[in-house]
Length: 284
Image (cartoon, rainbow, N blue to C red; front, side):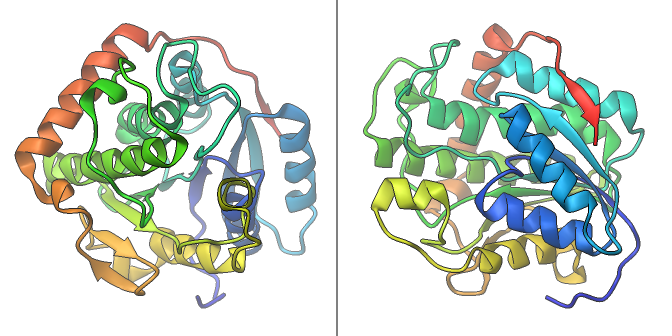
């Protein structure tokens, strides 16, 4: 991606303390943008914020702490951002989970569905009023996409790690297209992106036991998706960075009836578990 300076944007990036998220944050801050850094660990987030703020010609950084496996924390994150910013140019839903010692959340959901599907959906819905039609929502999908077990989605079934992850990423891709079609020209471009398979994140190392590729590959495509003109008119599409082009996701994501069913289930779950709470919010 070209490093030429663009008009300064305000960008919220979830999962900004590790892996692709951290590399993306570094690139965006180096380009002079205001980056709202989200992380779950306050100490790690503070360290990252200080490091990025010290970069030459850096943009402004802010820190937001939230555990995205808890929907009340997602609500609080959205509220905290909205209290400080009347406008958000880009939302990058990057945070993700593959393997964990605690697969069931306090809300009774599989943590993969909670963090990878429900949290970005809820955060996007709450922040849409801040994002103009020229803005963007970039959702981190994956080449791993598998048909969604509706019982598992709502917390009534248990899945192995790989299946839960692949289903959560398809569900994310399905609601991304569904929401893009719903907002049409009145809202931002909503785009699902596979940043590249087997990049060297902690998640990939823990899940597959491989070192993985250069994280900057994933960060560069996320910066392109957030800033470049080629993505401005790509709302509802899926970009596969394994092939380096827009292409078709899993067929279920192109099925309006199946996607609508997923969205209805997401909404039904959120109606039960999403309760606004409080969040530690501290500018770096």
